[in-house]
Image (cartoon, rainbow, N blue to C red; front, side):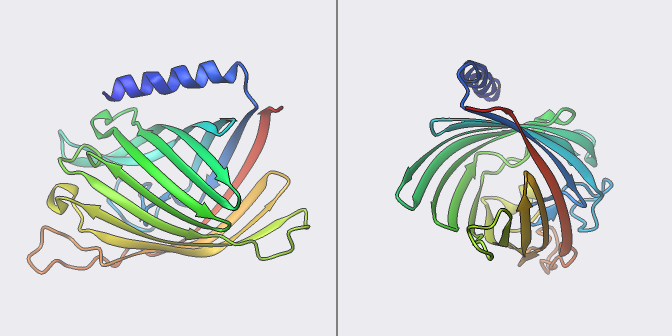
Length: 250
């Protein structure tokens, strides 16, 4: 199933690029790789907020509401055979369709999270979202969690209003998010269900974007302890600088 979906995404990408409306790429420099409130680049130590800097990249295609994105970058993954956390490389595909009606945008998508080393962690995720101006609600669902025998869902609400004049050549935005991760079986996932949040600012000009934000989790605990010990090491400030460049335009 995973290989079939990846093949379909590749076919869609190559066929569409022939008549591409917009093809662009991004290079991302981040002081930490934060995903859903936790660091995934922590020197092989599971879920420590003091992660290491990463360089990531994307290739993005968009045409008439349809989009395809390829993402790659370093990440820590769990070796389910030897039961150790080790360095790996992500190789992800995101395929989506969006429709705008007035100030409302509706979207659906399929995400394929792939790993070069521990590919037993590969995951397919389905997403639906709706946004109104600067407010966006996402609901994502996956049958497995990084190779673990549990399905899970992620609900997130983002609010990113522009704080300066819309006529300005640069954009200063508030960055805020509240999410909730639900696992059918937390013991399989290795973590309890939890909330995560983000608060910060972003500044964009001439294809450059700089973001500084604080992230943390709430009510996350170790499901293997009798007392369900709360985890308090996820809070961190992360700086992300990215540059987007056009490869092929209209």
